[in-house]
Image 1 (tube, one colour):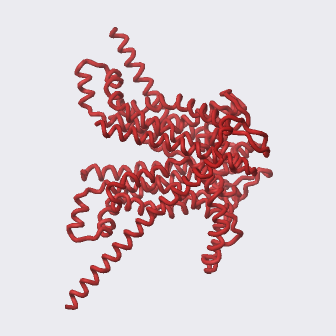
Image 2: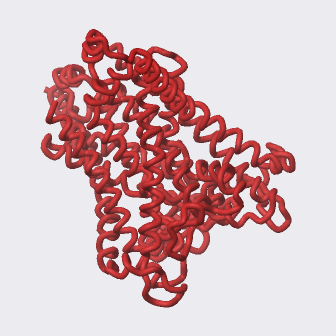
Image 3: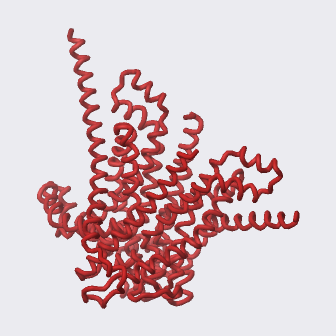
Length: 316
Length: 288
């Protein structure tokens, strides 16, 4: 009897331990190893610098350069985050400070629901609804107005097709808003009531309390949430897969088609007919792995850790 | 008296700024909600318009010929997702239990836990390329099971982290009461920790399934696609999401209609999972 129980102890403990080891260490490490191994032909042929700075992507001549896809990924992510950040902060302010107490859970749930919609739905909706709207109305309008401004106008040159950097970034921004605003809202709600009341006691207006008390207090949370969202946006595939056109070029304006790392992999992976081609796609995946893993680790260990300490010591 | 006028002007200015900024933030909230209703509205209107019984009962017709349905994709999606859950749920829960019950004070386990937390936001397409190298390339063909494995990889971190967090909320005094009665560690975990946290663990499982139910990218080169009805796990199998991708990008009007209808089912299903998870959490808060 006794021995049987001990056996159960050892068995359960070691099984669970193996699970944890597999998930927390073996899985990410073996992913990295496999990606490096699979991309080895491309690494040997192009090296690191030549691959990252190469602008040609020619499967026929078997010459591959990652710069267009890398640039596209960074551009779309940057634009989407730049739009999403102020909106997310606004939504967080509205939900945590302005909305009537009764409506709060409704608004929170609505924003969370927006985040639960599968990304392919965003992509398809973007293709069928937003892209035509962009091509027929928004982009011609932008060309008429902002396009006339010198220098800035360069960004809006080209034929408005709706399948371009602008539309892709826009749809991606809608997709990351719920994620970003949920984190910012949580950070806002960590602000002790006492601090806020002290602000009101000094005669501050609501906006002054938000600007001078809540936002500074929640700043690490806002920055952490932003970095996390950027990390997520980098690896997003389906929301942009419909909308970039997958053209390996560095777009000269926002109205030109482009590609991102994820879109290139999604579209070309099953069609790669040579070893170097497939290896180059794996190389792209490796770059994406390092970028997003690095960014997420940074957010997790540096920012959120600091945040935890801060909230931990001050006591809520 | 000039002083008082100056003061009034300052106060007025502050009030105006206050009003403007609060209006601005209300407008941004409105902006967020507009897209939510717009997307859901479009999916529901177009989806319902094209939803029909034959969508669920028929297999597809050859491209370009009207009619046909997506029975193969619905069944395939169900099989791939269920199998992923079958693999992912026990491993996810087990990992979460280890993090919370065995490794709470170990620095190494804490590091594993943080890595797992990062994996929650990991690019899903990279997981697809990983599984392709492990399971598709050696076998030489796409298979439904490799799709399930890649989805399981995506769901495990979500379940592990939620399980870990919920188990940490179980008061230590309960565990100590168990040990005081002479229970072994596993007995304490099984009969005290898990039974106290079962609703929370269930939420994690539902969230994990919701996370993978709408996932497309890793399936593109693992379970791939299939235009015919198939239940063979070693063969390529159609899924709802990959089919939506193929149909929406395709040139036929009929495909677009079916893509809308499939999107409705997919969105509705995912949101249903999500709302169920919320309801379980809500019930949990009420009962404690």
